[in-house]
Length: 192
Image 1 (tube, rainbow, N blue to C red):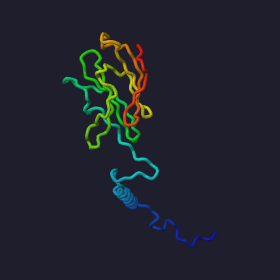
Image 2: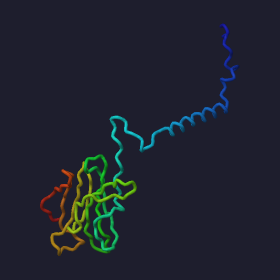
Image 3: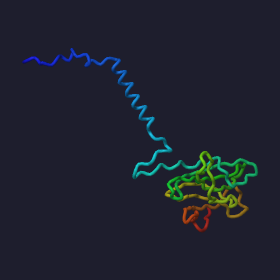
Image 4: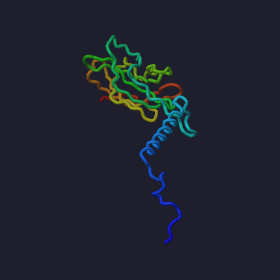
């Protein structure tokens, strides 16, 4: 076998990686990554790639909204909430079941639709009332599916029925149509 004319690799100084070489490589890599991060557009300047939809805003928070519910100084309670895109604009709304805190009994609930206020940092605002508290209804179930609000309402067949024990039950739904929420459900309340 004939010896190679090329020098032995052990003789080349640059073929041996020293700690200083690795440190320089790591520093250069970190600098490139940091620079790339600084050059990325921020969320306000970012645009969606062609064919992709922008991310929707988060659903409005139910606490802190100004509900049209007179509690005569008593605190309000958000008992249930559900979120989903109700008007087809790509951003979710929140449906909130709210009642006044009561020492005993079952206070009637209001069902409200909230949307995000356009002012940054402003609380959500009520855009629709689906159930007025004056109807003496309670909500046992609430959900939003495929743009429809679904609820189970509990009520009373007469003023003589104690507020602790509703004796009627309705399955109802609301859907946004032609600029308003349209209610559908059982036409006659049935006894629970």
